[in-house]
Amino acid sequence: MSLLVETPGLLTTFQDLGRFGFQHLGVGPSGALDEVSHRWANLLVGNSPEAPSLEITLAGPTLNFFRETLIALTGGDLSPEIDGRAVPQWRPVWVRMGSRLSFGKATQGARCYMAVGGGFRLPKVMGSASTNILAGFGGLQGRPLRAGDRLETGELSQQIWPSLLANLHRQDAPFLGLNWFAPWFREMDFLRPATLRVVQGPQWEALTAHSRAAFLAESFTVAPNSNRMGLRLQGSKLSLETPMEMISSGVTTGTLQLPPDGAPILLMADRQTTGGYPRIGELATVDLSKAAQLRPGEHLRFKLITLSEAQELDHRRETHRREAAATLLQRMLG
Image (tube, rainbow, N blue to C red; front, side, top):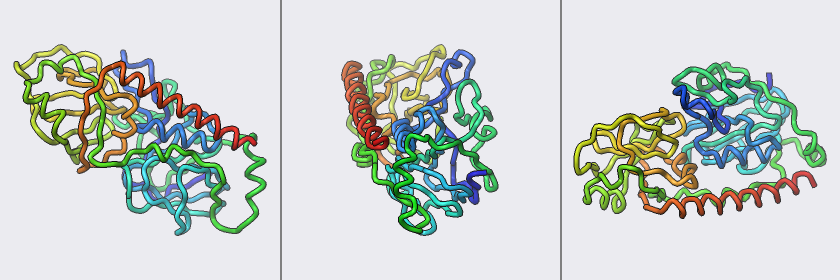
C-alpha cells in the first residue's frame, strides 16, 4: 500500500486521456475533463500523459502516505495542505512517508489533478484506466474513492532521481517543493463570466433569430445538477423556428444540445455517444479545459468562431504546450 484514503472528498476518481474506439458499442470516452491539467500533472512527475491521475472535484480527499512519493497538483486551486502546510501547485512535491494530504476551500476552479511519480497501479478496461461511474468499470472498481481505499503506485522514473537526491535531506519538513515548475498556470483562465468559443452546429440556423442573438449576447449560469456528463445551463430559453423530430446522431465532448425545455446542455467526457436533441454548437477544443473548471452557480458567455479559427487556436496552444514541456523536461533531466 502506498496511500490510504482517510476521507474520499466529494467526487474523486481516477482518469486518464480517455477510452476511445468503442463508441459504436455505446461506450463513451470518459477521461480527465481538464485534459491540459492532467497532462501537466503527469509531466511534472516524469510520467507519460497516458498515466492515470486523480481528478478531485470541489471538495478534496484526505490521503495518508505510507511511502515517500513524488506528486504534482495542477488545475483548480482547492487549497491543498500537507500536515497543515500549504502545498505549491504546478510543481513536483516530494512527500515524506507518514505525511497527510488534505484539501480546503475551492478558491479557483472546480477540479484539481494529482499525479504521482511512477503512476497509479490500475488495471485497464478497453485500453484505459478512466473511471466510468455510470457503467461501473475502470479506475478503482468503476467508482469514486471511498474511505479506507488503498492506492498503489509504481516506481519513480530513474531519470529524475539525480535531481531529487540532491535535495531530499536538506530539511525535515513533511514535504519538499522542487525547483522546476510548469508555467501553464499562467494560461489558466478563471475570469468570470468565462468566455467559451463555439463553432456553429448543424441546427444553429434552426434557432429563431431572437434565440441566436440571446445565445451570443447574454450570460448563462452553470446549474447545480451539472456533472461529468454535461454542464446544464440556465439563462434565456432558446427555441427553434419549427419543432424538430430528429433521428439520434453522434455527439462528442463539447457538443451543445438543445432539449425541448430550451436550456442548453454542454456535453462533457462522460456523455452518451448519440443524441436526438438539436446540436446548436460545438465547443472549440481549446476551451474544453476552461469549461471543466466551471463551478455550479458560475457564469459563462459564448462567442461564435469559425472552424478554421478553432483549429488555429488549438494548433497554437498545442505548439506552445509542446515547447514549454520540452523546456521543462530538459530542466528535469539536467
